[in-house]
Length: 171
Image 1 (cartoon, rainbow, N blue to C red):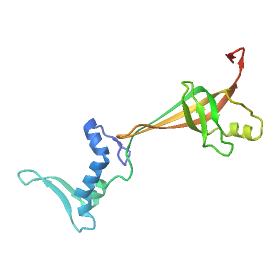
Image 2: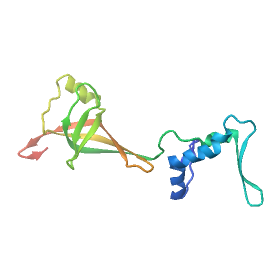
Image 3: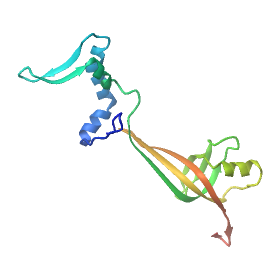
Image 4: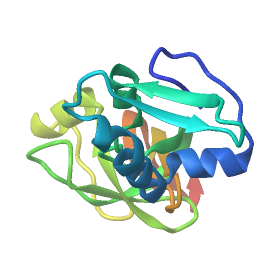
């Protein structure tokens, strides 16, 4: 777990699941933080069977127990690789709205980040037609939120070259 001061601590998976659970965080907010809101000299105290205080939260510390407004992201991974792709949708007006076919034949949306390439297109120095292959640097950003499927964002950071086929061989 990465804390707000950028320090990290390791916890068992069960503890991480509780900490990142929105329902659990909502419950903690209603039990600990909400009762201390706008209170004067109030504390949340847990005592053991002998009446000894084993856990105390002051008004100031109660802010640490507020509900998280968005899902907690467990992990972000970035991967950049050189791949051969086919453009299936092009947006001459901006970086979003592009689509490519990957080597595994899947169609994915991408953001075009190569301004040199789009500049060549807009200056009519780069022309292409359907089924022409391009070698590109493709960055894939994977965000995995607790309890959900991963979200993928893909960007072409650089169009390396236009691949040409001669006698059915790609060069």
